[in-house]
Image (tube, rainbow, N blue to C red; front, side, top):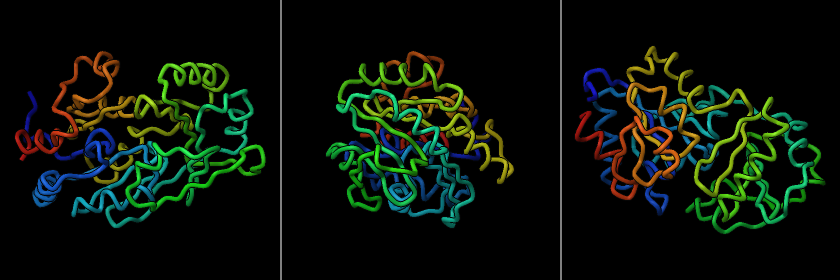
Length: 269
C-alpha cells in the first residue's frame, strides 16, 4: 500500500502512458497535473522523444516540469534551460550502421535539430501532430558526421527487431544498451544514458530521493525507472512481457482511460 505522505515527486513517461493513442493529453489529465503542481509536487516527464518534439506536448499540461528526453540524453529545467546533454560518438554509430542491416528496417538518427532516416515512415510521422522536429531522408553512407542523441530502428515485426537487437548487441554491448519503447520501436543509447540516471540527477538537484517518488510507464525503456522509485506503476496497455518481468509492480488502467491521472487523483491528491 502506498504511503501518500511519502510521495513528493511524480515521474511519468509520455507515449502509451500520459498520452492517449491519439498522442494527446486529455483535459482531465491536465487538470490533475495542475492541481499536483499547486500542491507542490515535483513533476518530471521522462520520454524517449526528442526535446523539440516533446516540449510543445508537455507545455499543454499548463504547469512547470522537468523534462527528460531521448531516454535520458537531455534534461531541460522547468524554465526550459538545458541542464544536461550527451551525444553518441560518430564512430560508435558508424560501427553499427556498417553492419549488414536489411533495408526493410527504418533507421533513424536523432540529431539536435532534425531526425535523419533512410526512408519515409508514415507511422513515425504520425507521432507528431505538428512537425516541430523535422525529418530528413538521407543515405547514411554519405553522412560524414553520424554523431547523434539516439539511434533508432522500427519495423512492423517485433520479432525481427528482437533479432536485429541481438545481432547488434553481440559485438556492441560495451558501448550501447538497447530498449523497446514500444514493440515496434527499438532504441540504442550510450551505455551511460538511461531515464533512471537522468531522473536521479534531477532528484539530487531538488534534494529528493527515489523513495519519495512515484513513476508510471509502459515500455522497457521505463524499466529501471519503475524499479528504482518508491512506487512504480505499469499501464494496462503495456506489453505483456514487461508486466511479466515486473510482476511485483501494480498494473493500472490504460492510457486511453487516463490511468495516470486517475491513479494520482485517487491515491495522491
